[in-house]
Image (tube, rainbow, N blue to C red):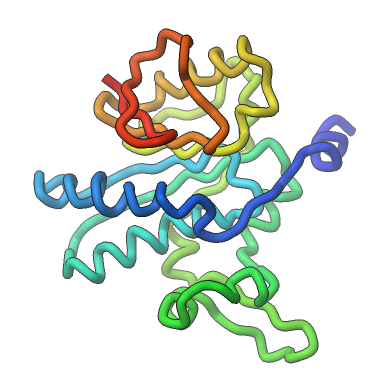
Length: 212
């Protein structure tokens, strides 16, 4: 009953390539630096992934970067978590209305989406090569133990903290710090901040922070 209540009450507003400057930073700064330093793997966490558009966008951005820069043998994985089992089910199925990708470049749609044959109810599905890079897990940020045994170089947690008061925000961010490697990056939503929270973070771009 509690899980059902959470599913009904949680807000799940998202779309592909939301807040695009974050993905530009990921490509131009983070991935470029990794390749320059010959670091050939990266782990990302999409914390509060909703129906999956964010983690799938991350995978597409990385794939496009590797293709454009002719980089081989680079490995990546993405953990996508949410509190709602309902949206996680949708995210795992990776099926969306065709209008959800209407504004994406045709080249991206052809490479990474499958199109349904039903013209009356046009749908698209993320291709297996992208889906295979993402693992889904239910996580409640209020819990003491997230059940994770790994660390990440990138954490995206955008437009989630705004639903918590300042004290809870700080506790959640402190937990994120235990999972973010030194030098790793935290991406927050445009209306979120770490100001006055005494966290080991420095601002490197608007709403992008690096662990120090």
